[in-house]
Length: 116
Figure 1 (tube, rainbow, N blue to C red):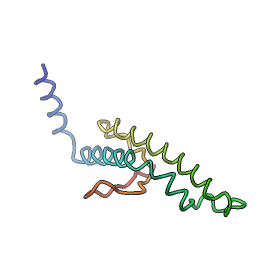
Figure 2 (tube, one colour):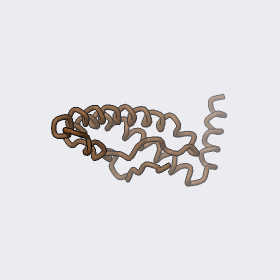
Figure 3 (cartoon, rainbow, N blue to C red):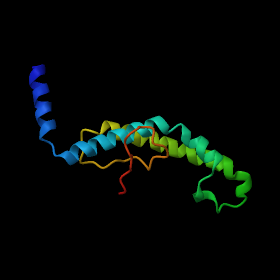
């Protein structure tokens, strides 16, 4: 029975178009990259507050704490969408959910997030 299931999976995998393989691999690698790099978001945004909060009043005082909060929320979003990208890899029709990667930690592969 296990051999039949493996043969069926192999047949389906070989029968998919090349775009499906690259889209599935891209989603998987983007999700793994998001799961590996989400802890850096609060630190990076605390050091360099994002441009979205530059117009706040008293930004010189509250910029770093707000950057940390902004980065923490972005880290949660990046971890959640990264896990969803990894889980939904077999469904290659669904576009990637992860935001644009801050760092590319997977060598030899240029990661780009899909723009919906």
